[in-house]
Length: 144
Image (spheres, one colour):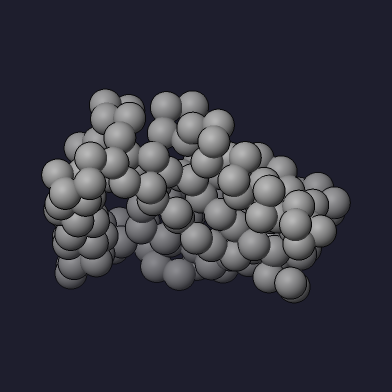
């Protein structure tokens, strides 16, 4: 997504217009230090607490997406699912996928994995090292 101007610090809008210059995005008030790093550390601390208290944690990474692809999207197909489950081979267990698919099926929704978006969020300290941190991204098509 960095090639589309939508990496860690966005430099382009969803329609490809300049949001900020690449160089200024990493200088000045340093958006990563101001916005992302405090969030990531707080999330990591919360996950550590949940794992210590309960021995495991399920992260549901929720988003929405439009019914028509925006210019920045890698998948430009127009036949979009109504519900996308973003999965990771290490952190998304089959039982979690089946549970989300069953909820979608009960509502009559067309559900796909890793389409139109892929993957899920897990704090870096736990990424691909601790299977007790289960995670799935759940993306709902916005017209629903």
